[in-house]
Image (cartoon, rainbow, N blue to C red; front, side, top):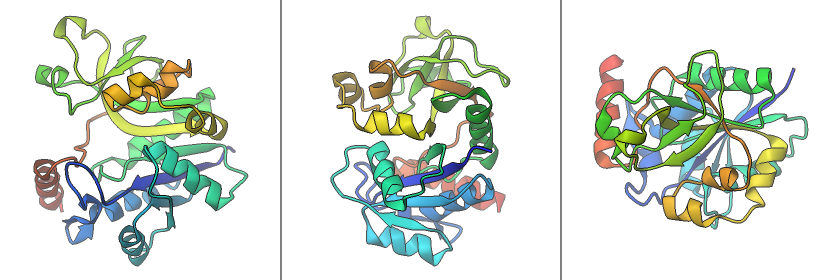
Length: 246
């Protein structure tokens, strides 16, 4: 059976909401909520990759594991690869990159992506959900993915493009991209050794580095879009939802 490792990049110096990994929801830091979701999948070992000792202390205090990484990484992908190298786990087949700012992610979505990767032998996969509000097409904070075929719960088509803005007339097979990734180890290593592309830098979307270098990305359909915590408003919204449900 293929083995999967879940790595969670996290740092305190987010541009729009500094210190967000340690913001509390139900008296537990956001990063620890994400770690628990990952642990609940039962997929494999879970580690946080971070440049900040405060995050390591928080994660370990709540029963998680964390690795200190360089503070010079340009992307979360580069950070998790350093973490993987430091772990020296040579029997791993797949690595899941779970964003540390999405405490609302469902464990079922992580499990589903992992199953698609193993069952299809895909090199690189991610997930996306249906766009519920047409305003999202013009919202640059909502990343869109365009797929070759219409997403269904039983298919795993390739991505044609990722973008921040999208014209409504070009909205066919366009979905709300969710920042959950899975890679074969050799593909992750290949990606981090490629130079950042102009397309990636201009759009602030690191997955474009793969597409620009002819690396295919498969996309699975997610049941819903979790709220990523990028701003104070996002934090207050997800905090209200999660504390109400509890």
